[in-house]
Image (cartoon, rainbow, N blue to C red; front, side, top):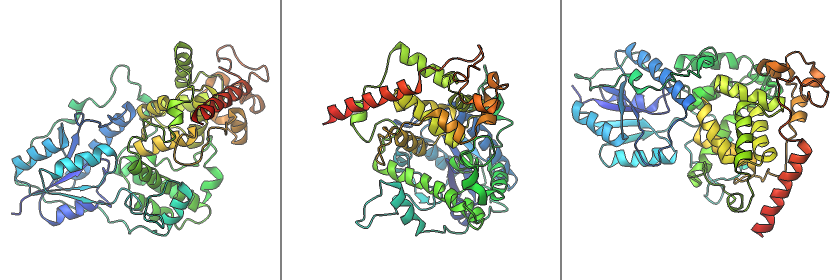
Length: 462
């Protein structure tokens, strides 16, 4: 019998469209492995919501593997140490994996390659990050020209189905018990609302993709309306690799209508990773240095109290509060509302974007290092793309424009009895119930304060 090959899973928890699995299975017996690495320096630990999703996704992956005569080996520790131990225990000759691009994963791959025969494959993006180049051979910093160039590489390869069976090794290495990792919250169990919202795992991803494919042609008409199911809600499945971007592309590309708008958003994920290749610490450092050194972000007790009100959905701005409560209850927030809530924290409250980025990292089931960092820096205007800071969203205008009345009633029950005209701004109409807080700051006052802070930064930067 040929020596077994290790299949190293990370954020690619699927069996279909899995190039590493195909290559590993072609050589003989396969040992599927997932390592929970809490020890590698600079490895950004998952947030609580992501850990909830990971637990359920790993359980589903193990079930899928067992249905094919295999199983998932779980280990905890440094990736290079645990993979070397498994190779020693099993006599495995090589390790196959899908390539990852976050700075800690690139470091881990280099460390593993020093000790084992590591073969990395592509498959987590529409095109391998770093492969889409400018005319001069560099990497793109601006999204629009990046998307035009990426579009020229499309369509991606047609997805490959999951294998019907896998050869097992003669002896399985030892494995941790998933429950012993304690990825799920206990007391208090803040994830009770997640259960009815999500079905983690590859099968759940396929069901979600099938449902979205039926409405994809109307995506541009519906994507900004938080009160309806107009978006794909595939983001956590895509983040954990339960479905590949290539599979999504081929499932919806022929839907017609405005599906190209949706495909461009899948392309944004590739763009975000391209930015991280150039700025590995983008999640903690502004690309425009003046935002870190010269912008007078608020701090201290009053700012902390305002930040807590934002976290809890108690700002007095119904659209912001609805989004923040949806986030806490479900681990997800509608994308338009994410922009409104992020802009509110940065510009109305003048609180450093990094505090918001960290909160989203901990509470989103789709928390992705590249996308989260790039989105927050885009809203702040501190990133490599356009400077958006002077463009200050008016939350009440946004709420009215995108017909958020039903959405607000769902997530801010204190306002459930208020009519459509007044619910966006109950203070203005004299309809605010005593159970709902007044506005934490007026829009005009907040706008003036933000622009004044921006002027201070510009003067110092000059």
